[in-house]
Length: 509
Image (cartoon, rainbow, N blue to C red; front, side):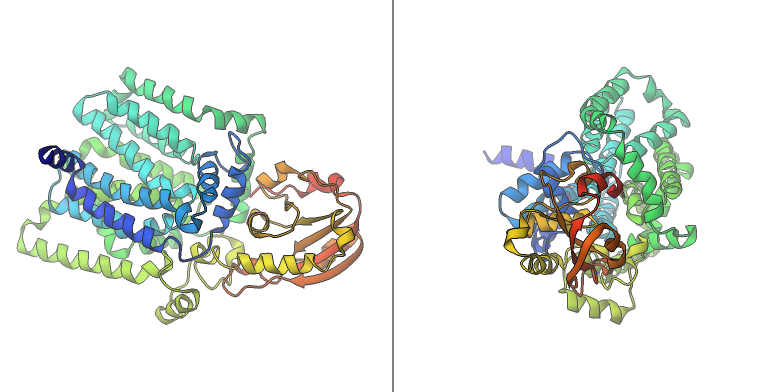
């Protein structure tokens, strides 16, 4: 029995498994400290309406969220998959280093970087579609390199499987696949394109992703419309500040590692077969910049670059000076990530986090125009204030005469507000919104005469109402700024009827 256990332990690779379990434990320990994130609320409600796709994402995460939420484990249980993905990424990074011939120090550097890079920590802090990208993109890169280096076909089939499953979570895998194919075409690794297994894997990817893409086609590809709208919603960050922010969010002390990962395949002969990965990464960067993408859209590229950089730099640490430099660099990386960790993970309470950020002079980059003035990073602020919001809407609802409530609907501006009301509200009708998937759900079986509307501009509501009565306002100190100061108003006698107005309320973003 013991020899078998020892054999399994060695196959799991302790050097990879131990740091992976430590990362998993960290995320599990912190997973339930804050409330549900805006998108988590929305995912749950979407998953409660099962479909092959949704306006803004494939079905994977919504179905996962609704299932986990139904178990009653709260935010902690909902975030189990993200925590597992964070740990699995560290394990995979170590395995990737071994594939490239790295040992010892290279294993440690790659594991450390993937474990403590602030952006990677933040992505795994909630259940979201981006939480699985670093693992999926790195896995596809690993499997394609393995197929090339071992001259075996099975990794290509697994790469197709991973890509297909990833496309059921987030469509961004299309960009990585496109980048890899361009990289293969432009390098000697194009020989992989001649192997039948490559195309079998591609067919497998397409087959798995087909239901979601068919749903998009049937509904007029709303995701493309949403992507075009994101250009206006996202802040137009100039190139230099965008790049500077990459250094910060990925840990400045880790910069030599990923920069080396970009350059090494073009200067180190043993790594020249990895040039297609760097070219693929460059393609993704161009796509993200052209599309006004957010900083975290590039996060899935870094684990692969950390791995290549670790393999390339480790031999330089054989001298005393090299060992000293590596030790200082690793210590600096840990210190930087420790400094940034409270802004990526829910380590501190909101008041303490606010004071901490003020003390160190930190402020999050404004990734969307509407974020201006928010006190905490979005990953924190969007987990706060939802119960306050629902309580304020409930208070306004309870001021409406009981006899009028059956003919009164509640309309909000965005899916976070709508989902919070659907999940946390007591005695409220299903929330209505023109935002993303909520628009397709329409009036949700209601035929309202009056509408309790939560919006910014009371004057804009008056032309559509026989009478407007303000019943409250929204406020929660640590919520996103744009959620505060909204008017809660009863629009009596909607004109024309809401069913007539509905097409004009469509808002994909």
